[in-house]
Amino acid sequence: MKSITLKSTGETITFVKTGKDTEGAFTEVICTIPAGQEGPPPHIHPLQDEIFEVIEGKLELSAKGKKIVLEEGQSLNITAKTAHPFSNPLDRETKFRATYKPALDIEYLLVQGFDSLNSQSNPNKPSFQMLVDFDFILKQIHGQYKFAGAPAIIFTIFAVIGRLFTKPKVKSLKDHSASF
Image (cartoon, rainbow, N blue to C red; front, side, top):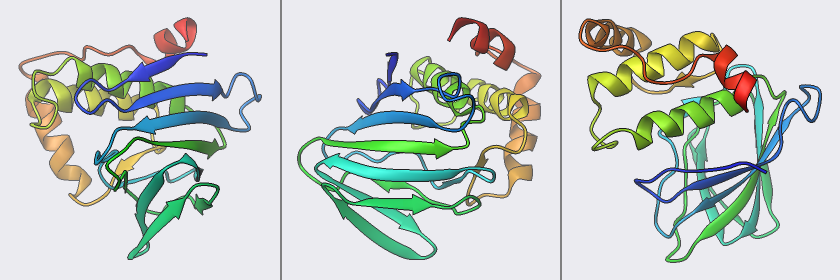
């Protein structure tokens, strides 16, 4: 099993079953989030359901204007096209299973996204390199992932400006698939 860790938060994702393992039906990961840490900002999987199942601790999610706290053994299906963030509200580690149906290219997004963030001197402060990398990633998996909140055109404008100064430092989908 392959694991990736986001250096800035300590969040770890272990791939249990990939799209390749399930012929594209789903990808299953175990995610560990340290005490008090937040996961990604509000985002949308337009073509995938994401099922969260808490293994240890508690997981706080927001979806459709509601805050939901899942405890050990509880699960929640976030349907496609639903904006959601998640976080660990506890003073101890939380571990949960996330299943993405269908698999699509979620492994690419997660691995290359973590690689980009890990290469930043301050991943909490957007840089041109970060914007260029994420713009490149999202173009590789067109329509599979969106940031919720700010209009996409703003992200695109900054990424275009960033490309004047730097090139993407993440792998293409083809190169990633060949090595994953």
